[in-house]
Image (cartoon, rainbow, N blue to C red):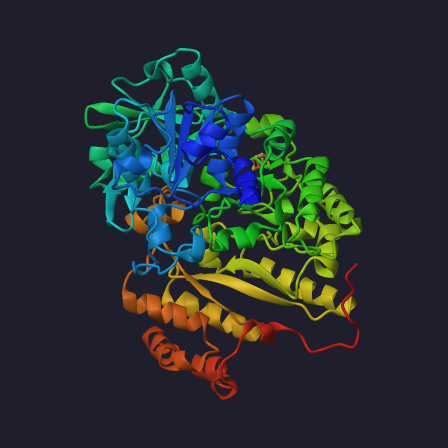
Amino acid sequence: MAAKHHAARAFLPINRQDMKTRGWEELDVLFITGDAYIDHPAFGTPLLARLLESHGYRVGIIAQPDWKNPEALKIMGRPRLFAAISAGAMDSMVNHYTAAKKIRRNDAYTPGAVAGKRPNRAVIAYTAAVKGAFKGLPTVIGGIEASLRRIAHYDYWDDKVRRSILVDSKADLLLYGMAETALLEITNRLNSGEQLPSLIDIRGTAYLSNSVPEKAVELPAFEKVINNPDAYNLAFKLAGTQDNPFSPTTLAQPHDKRYLVVNPPALPLSETELDGVYALPFTRQPHPHYKETIPAYEQIRHSLTSHRGCFGGCSFCAITHHQGKTIQSRSQESILKEIDQLVAQPDFHGTISDIGGPTANMYGLGCGNPQAQKNCHRPSCLFPAVCPNLRTNDDMAVELLDKVRRRPEIKHVFISSGIRYDLLPFQQHYFDALVQHHISGLLKVAPESTSDRVTDVMRKPGAKVFTEFLDEFRRRNREHGLRQAIVPYLISAHPGCTLNDMVDVALYLKRHDLRVEQVQDFTPTPGSLSTCIYHTGKDPVTGQPIYVPRTAKEKRLQKALLLYHLPEVRQDILEALKVCGRVEAAKELLGAETKQGRGNAKQNRPPRRPKKKQVR
Ligand code: SF4
């Protein structure tokens, strides 16, 4: 019991007893989150709470409170400065519902994966609960849900355009993107006696105002975009002008009689600042009062984050919007120090499951031309072709992996974060290290489609680049006597993808001996370009109409084509081919498959070769 109590003391307070142990009568900042409390830098709320703690603030966390009971919010009393509210690591609607709008039965961020521990639209529900519990207390919302719903946005689950979540939640301030600098500035300024109405000049925040700031880019009003797809597309396009933190732009969008004002994004953290964040005293464990395992923690407990940001700019992905296009890399020393902590964990048995970030092979990369970067409004440094200004040198990543492999306590280091294979031609040493040392047998890669018409909409490299990668991957495996396979990840029913395109994709998979394990149905998540196209049926930049698969039947047939090797989808495939007038493809697509029965990704492996895989 004493040991358990001691273990709990290493965590941030979650109740009055913890506060008493630290000699605190009140908190300065109360954090509310929709996830369980896992004291690990992979989770936003604990990371920000630890940051404020390191600056001398008294912070506590209420994780997954009963939002219908005001007493649940009062367990640590009224905080002195404000409440910081987040839905957790995922948007609560994405967390709760599948692409087919069916309720999910589990939640990876909850002990025992139990569903239902957070409300729908958690930011709105938690803010209302805090306001009910503490009248007049300033409320600050942040995290993915608040960040990606900051302007008027299409909501797939309501099938309508919703107001900014700042308006709907009635919170005082919204933090978007990675929030360290903004949250610290808010805390410092409130602590020094400033009042909320003066906090209107902080990067990475949004607020409501009665007037438009000078030089702000004005977006079409909520009342206009709600029923007008062209106005919605214009608002989306104009909002994109704010993506570059080095050329600051302020946005304003009328909502009824007020304006939502979005300040320029926060500047990326320097290497020293990011190292500082990862040096905070995390226990790297879920809070000891949890009895059951938390799947999201199991997934990252032996992994390391080497960097933030992604310059890929995939149109369906939220990361660029949230973490930004600028790669912020930790120093090797900082990562190696974290490895010291990891190897000291009693549950560590020599395998690091991942060293990566949103895209593993972007560690240490970035724009090599600061002047061009300042004026750059390309959403992707890779699409439609790799920008000549991009630094693609793989030295830093290769050196880091090499140093980690040399540690005697480490038997395996895997890369399980996604990789951008269109970068690998510039990263020959990284490619070689990846193939030789860092794949646990199957490499997951995400071409998402092999139809160029569709990959153009997705802002992904097309079939040619993927095929070159596939051939090179297989060649390198043969060269090293390895039998590692590719598991391709593909999205069905993405905007731009017709049934005919999907027949081509299925034929590509068949011709290249690839089988998909799981198909991801396109989900129009808040704030992405793909969601904008899903809603309006047009590219917001070019104004060109784009086909959007919408019916349940077409979605089913598209998915079946990706799973061409499974006997149970045979009828759907025949129907899809008939609809497209391509019945002649049935022989090639279905010929041998139904006799073979159920396939799996292991069958993507090349034939066995005599030489064994070396660990180093
Ligand atoms: S100039 Fe090129 S490399 Fe630099 S940020 Fe823009 S697209 Fe990326």
